[in-house]
Amino acid sequence: MKVAVIVFPGSNCDRDMVRAFELAGAEVSRVWHKETALPAGIDLIGIPGGFSFGDYLRCGAIAARSPICGAVREHAGRGGYVLGVCNGFQILAETGLLPGALMRNRRLKYICRTVPLTITSTDSPFTARFTQGQQIALPIAHHDGNYNATPEQLELLRGEDRIVFTYDDNPNGSVNDIAGIVSANRRVLGMMPHPERAVEAAHGNTDGAQLFAGLMEALGTADA
Amino acid sequence: MKARVHVMLKDGVLDPQGEAVRHALGALGFDGVEGVRQGKVIELDLAEGTDEATVREMCEKLLANTVIESYQVELV
Image (cartoon, rainbow over all chains, first blue to last red; front, side):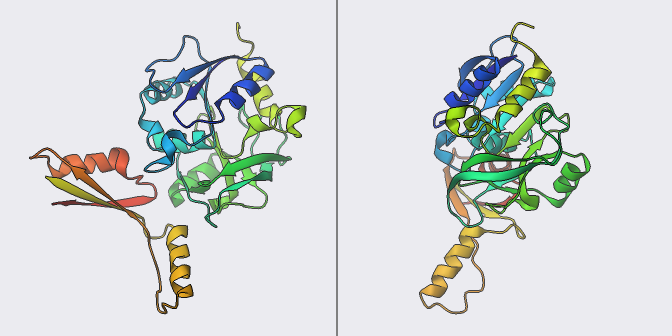
């Protein structure tokens, strides 16, 4: 599996994401947002957490219009895989690759803690290694994680089984406790919790490792 | 010429910041504030002759997220 992790000014989880993919056995490169093309043969694009462009205007809004996002759209359009975590999820929502928007947390506070989640669909390469209804815990660290979508969008997400992670104890006001959703072809995932911060013993929690392992299973070794 | 763009959360979208402002006004003794909605104003300095349609396109493409926000354009 060949992975490109996009780096924006203000990204701060890019190295963590690179590390998580490398631990899983992927070949990873980091790509600056001003690039207009991806390295050849990329299977998956990682859009990391952070505060791209200082969250100016709206979280993810400026990053979603940066030069590399044209290549991200093309990659997704070709059926390529994309993982957006935290600010990465906000950016994917702003690009329109995923429906809905992330708003300020209901109680207005920045929240940084590990929260319990439920795997609500294993029908995606990201969640295939988990079991349906499995409870896991992952760190969250965000100010704008309050997922919002139109009733029509929610109906579609529910009907197509595209809500893959939910919060057990909703920390931020997200509608339907939504913590992560996939695209219609199930190859683009946006999630607020940080799986890359829970992949090795030193993290004190390895619940996130199965996500990266599942992707390796779907996409194979780097030279395959 | 200038354009002023007003961006507000759509009706029906909960505005946690507006709600916090409403509580704070109540705490200061201002009774009767029944609702507060917080939005933003974006002022654009534009080349003469820029039409409203162009400004609306800017809103659609960047200035507002129309999933949750509505906008109004005022040419001044």
